Length: 261
Image 1 (cartoon, rainbow, N blue to C red):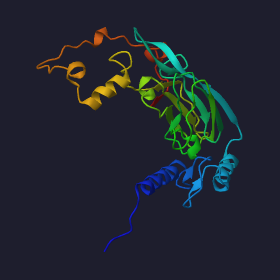
Image 2 (tube, rainbow, N blue to C red; image 1 turned 180 degrees about the vertical axis):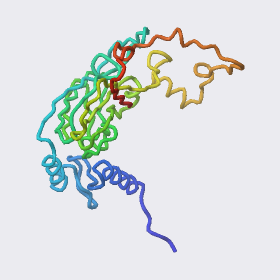
Image 3 (cartoon, rainbow, N blue to C red; image 1 turned 45 degrees about the vertical axis):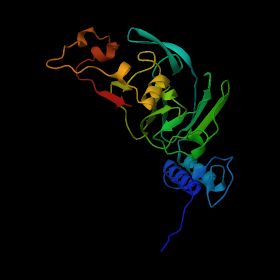
Image 4 (cartoon, rainbow, N blue to C red; image 1 turned 90 degrees about the horizontal axis):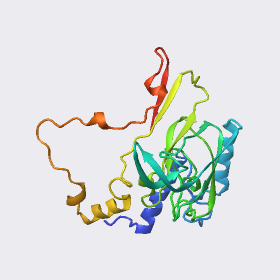
């Protein structure tokens, strides 16, 4: 017996719907507000989504936190090695954005890159049109243009944000997003925010060049390290770390908070 068939388009639309439900806590499969309603889908600009957003605002703190980020080409010092890359502001990673769960967060993104970009708020439960997936949940932000992302910060935690366009994230466009818990006292003495990344840009070609070689299957010349037998020389003494005075001279008895992203 032949079962019901499903088209490729239908499969993709189903995947979009599941992603939308996950992004909004399983409540609505919301597509961009400019999309065309069809097949029972709920649009991000619909009354249903508007009611959910109003409920989030009503349960929130009543505070509005405003911020801005500017993705742009920059030169950064990576522990003594200066490279040309892209970043939010003048450093990699970008400076943290911070608010409290329940705050309304407005972030203006000023695109100073030579190509379009977006911002994805990694790990947050958001309406789809604020989720930053280009051509799927929002139009891209063209060079020289600005877009405002506006949403209620849903859950406390340590998150990060980055683009979903090409290899922009691998160039250095990422930064922490810290959502404080209003029920947490925060009575630690020192807080460290640690961002881990395996860096390529300017050190081993560009991310686009590495991706191109991976696609071509030619990794022999540039990226294969000869096998070393026996004891490997410890060269860590020559590494240059940037350590703040607080990290190296934390007084005994103090409470530390370390955030990893």
